Amino acid sequence: MHIIARRVAIRFGSPVLSSLCTSRLTGTRRLCTMAELSPEQVVFNKPKMWMTSEHFLFSWMKVELHVHLDGAIRVQTILDVAKRRGISLPTDTVEEMTQIIIVESPGTLTEFLGKFAEYMHVVAGDREAIKRIAYEFVEDKAKEGVIYVEVRYSPHFLANTKVDPIPWDQKEGDLSPDEVVRLVNEGLREGERAFNIKARSILCCMRHMPSWSMDVVQLCKKYCNEGVVAIDLAGDESLNCEANPEHRNAYEEAVRSGVHRTVHAGEVGPASVVKEAVEVLKAERVGHGYRTLEDQALYKDLLKKNMHFEVCPISSKLTGACDPDFTKHPVITFMKDKANYSLNTDDPLIFNSNLHLDYYTAHKYMGFTEEEFKRLNIKSAESCFLPEKEKKELILKLQEAYGMVQSTAF
Ligand SMILES: O=c1[nH]cnc2c1ncn2[C@H]1C[C@H](O)[C@@H](CO)O1
Image (cartoon, rainbow, N blue to C red; front, side, top):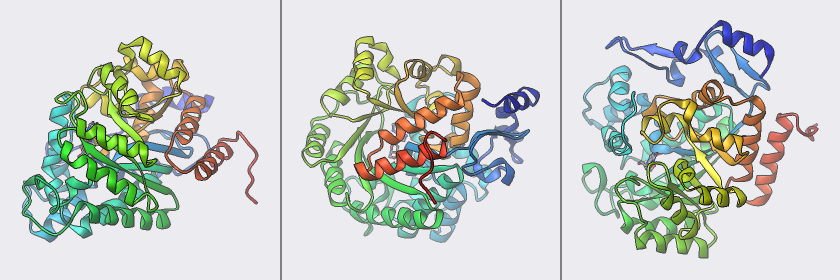
């Protein structure tokens, strides 16, 4: 870290405190959303650790590999769509709606997952909304200095036909999971053009809905040339530990047809879920994976295999996955062991967070240095699901930006 930055950090105390906003409604303090930060608090791709009186930022180019589209919607968009569709919500103000949606203190993964029901019925089944959230997502990531993102979602959760059961108490409509994928692809593609970053998607199977999983892998295959790069298994690991045979069949089909694979495992579930993800589901990356450390033999084996862990610091505290004391976080062990991992937001809407806050947390409470941030971003690029040629270009772009190689640009 630059000496000047360190001095500023010391002088101005905890940027986390100063990044809290006071709710006009309740008077309670909460983390600012990106939209609430002043322009000088958000910088794009500035080649240095960057600090104002308000904020610490690792403002170099970044890669994000684990973020849920339906956990990254703007609150304003939820309100706009509800108004247009005549859907009544408990409030029509961003502040009040934010308070309803967000998790402010550590709870359980099950409680956290319940939060999606506060707003998913608003956007599900609506073509315009789905395209809009994908487009706005890319804009938000570009503002955080992300140059490559893999965003994940369940196509079934956004559909209202050809899905059983129809989610979120929707009436049957005419938007299928297949069309959801097309709409998200379009929104991401338009966002890429407008904001000059690369965005790809990962389709999620849900642990409690094994009957959807074969559909998910078929959609991955169908749209592999239109931005879909992998399959995931998300949902409540604490209720449903061992992967159902239908998930296993879907992952076997993914292996057969060359679809990349990641699995939420070891977030709140035991290390055995990680082992199963890697050995049975043939996961190439592990979503979260914190509890891998409880099985040292497995951890050492995965270190040797260069397994990538998609770490989400703020998320891991608020879902109760990890000790709320960040100084005890498993990613500190990953860092010390020079493991292969990324830093990610997971669900910034529900955690009222952004990627800067995850980096800030790692810096402030876990001793992360600028060098480690650069290293983990290169590892993230190496572990992304882009085709080899594009992956190499991404790695080179980061290396050039980080001053590790001479720029080839002219
Ligand atoms: O952190 C998580 N763990 C497990 N499942 C999650 C997490 N964040 C979001 N999900 C679920 C809820 C979403 O609706 C779904 C697809 O994005 O994935």
